[in-house]
Amino acid sequence: MTDRDTLTEKAERLFERLEALLSRVEERFLGLEEDKPRRDDEARTFRWISRGPRGILRPVPFRARGRLDDLLGIARQKEALVRNTRQFLMGYEANNALLWGARGTGKSSLIRALVHAFAPEGLRLVEVGKNDLRDLPEIVEAIAASPHRFILFCDDLSFGAEEPGFKDLKALLDGALSTVSDRFLIYATSNRRHFMPEETATTEEGREIHPEESVDEKISLSERFGLWLPFYPFSQEIYLDIVEHWLNVFGIERASEEVKREALRWALARGSRSGRTAYQFALDYAGSWKMAAGEGRK
Image 1 (cartoon, one colour):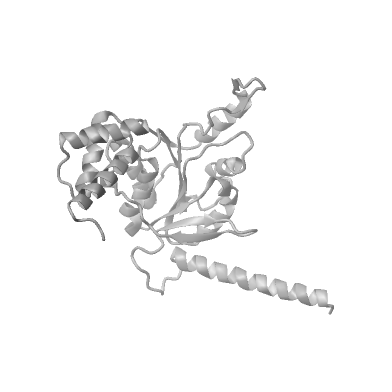
Image 2 (cartoon, rainbow, N blue to C red):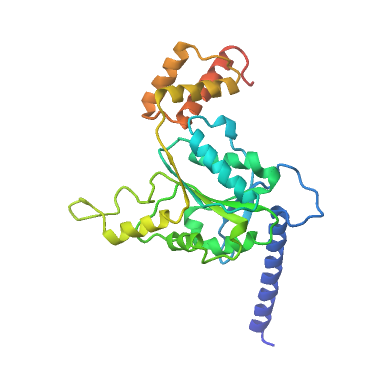
């Protein structure tokens, strides 16, 4: 046996060991090792990490700031997604879901809040970045043996004409990549219903053009989501309700008229009356109020 053959054999053995180790890590964090005790809050959410020829599911700390009751102004959307998720967990038919619309209106927060509500019933969340959508077959394979049910969460999606991952997502929505479709659903968010950027292409003069075939392709992807949930900018009344809710959460019982005026000025400066803006104002106001009252952290 030559030195080259010896090195090749050693490399193959090392690769086999690494593959076995990664498999055990996945089993541990996905809950496949039934005989090992687990903390109640352990491994509710995962992130897919691409690493060369093989990616891994990495557990991430679950720090979603809001529960379902914290999400105001989206009652209809919340009711529809909760019902769909409950059907899924009970083994009934359920749809993949697309949450689309204005920024900061609670699309991502609503999906993450589902983990708070349904983790005890076996729901787990896997965050999949747009650049990792090409790994969808591997992700499906990684979760196939788990006793849990999974939401594959694709956040803030939009696609250019030839971006990778588009066809992989389309194939998964069609069911072409998986035989375990009853074990997972895909929930995605986007600022636009059809995942298209502002300009699909431009001419040399800079005029916006929309090639018909490219547009039809993007529409064909969004139509593969059975549940469409639109999110619209909040009215002033709802925005102030959200501000008051978070101030209550942070220990301030009632927002005065002056505080409400400050909240509106805060929103005007940011050009957005969204749930995210309301939460950020409440953080700033509550922190400064407590510090002035001598209650801040030292």
